[in-house]
Length: 271
Image 1: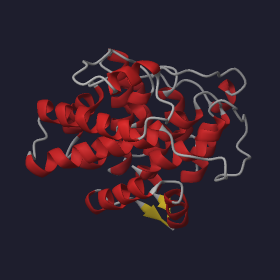
Image 2: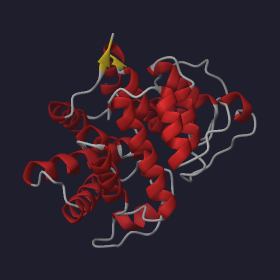
Image 3: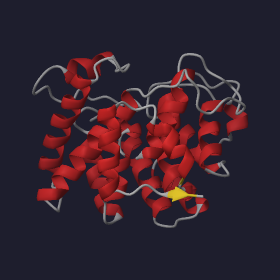
């Protein structure tokens, strides 16, 4: 989960001021957490809560608790750059899914990977937590691509395995970052963000390099880097000093939530 949050924080200052290079100060005073962090934590809290009293995490209970928890957290942090349709959903009790295929589906799904006991459960839980807002097939697909790539990374798959899995089931990864960097533009859809986020991971050498790759192509930098960071944490782990620095960008409530969640879903730390 912290991999997504670090990607969000680092990418936040470049979302509307893209930086088409890997050369930048990683953490700066301009960095902040956004809706990606808030919703990642909200979904993680929901998944843990459902697991505590329903080990199967059945679809109905997980959808219900996820929607309730996302609304609770979103209303507590209302000024975090949510999309307009998401804002309407957030502040309307009982509102149904609005069929989104926005890239927010991919940035908030990381807790599913750490909770799932097998790939089938990972896919099912991904659909449950995503469909409360992003019920369009492309939204479900985008979240599932991030969740399954992360699950494979967490359980020892090679990059070649992950690439083949995504190519066969989700998106053709038939490009390099260098090939798209000059032409890639802001795109809030899953289909215009998730493949790029996965390639940013596949071309990386370590966790930090993966985040730098994601930022370097521009686009929706915070969400793209959050998606990349989700997979990169599972594959490489996060340096301990980077974890400590990232926590300083969170307020007391979110920091407390992260530390509590880490008791259930320990972060993968390297170095």
